[in-house]
Image 1 (cartoon, rainbow, N blue to C red):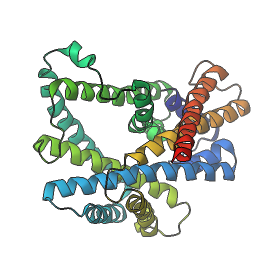
Image 2: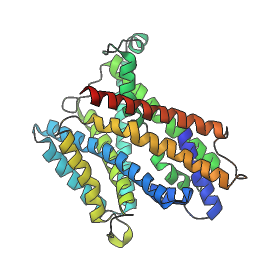
Image 3: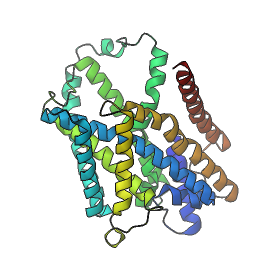
Length: 345
């Protein structure tokens, strides 16, 4: 919530000072906030890394789902065909049309999620037993630490904050309310889903779970992959020459790179098997830097330049320090864990 509000604060102040719309590309956004092309390039690289990790996981997951539906075994072959379909979508449809497609996927996602969640919650016979049921891990703290980066990645919404502030005409009250709900909803969905699965025995298998599970799986994987392709396309269009149709679509070179690199990483590191480590890498390093530490740097720089401007986030430097400590601690903890694991191997 704090990181989302800080990003919104930077976007609103940038609009108020210049009168121009805030760019959707993180590179261009950071360029304007930090007034440093090198800083903008660094932000862009971190954004590319994070979205590549998430898209790699999504492509493997899509290949696994297609294999489960068809009974095939060529997971990476299916993932490659799926990736080509995403390339075709991104190059043939305008950004506005892609946004409509993504919105349709979200509508299917919420509808199917409700169709799974409500019966699952209704079938929970002993709620307290479900809430207090022990996990399968013998070391709870270690299990929580291992899962935390993945949970953090699934709860990310900050990548659309600049677009939300623009849609809401940089209104502070409306932006604050929307960001509060945006930060709360994914966590509530995650907790409710875990509760229903543990206590209600929800069948989450894409192959045997029925049409609602199929719709939920397809919408989740497709929406996530399409969002990553669009984010990668926005960033790569800053580097790779090539124009889409009248500048409204993503260029073919940028889109091929956006899909090809994550696909190659999935083949090299997962080989068609579960690639949750990609989400872990994004949540351990990419997301904390991109949505925690860098927004603090942008807000700190902007507050020094505009001391009289009203802040969206109260608490002054203390609120910024809390965010740096939390995200910085996560990065340091994960880095030390990965180094120790590498040395032990």
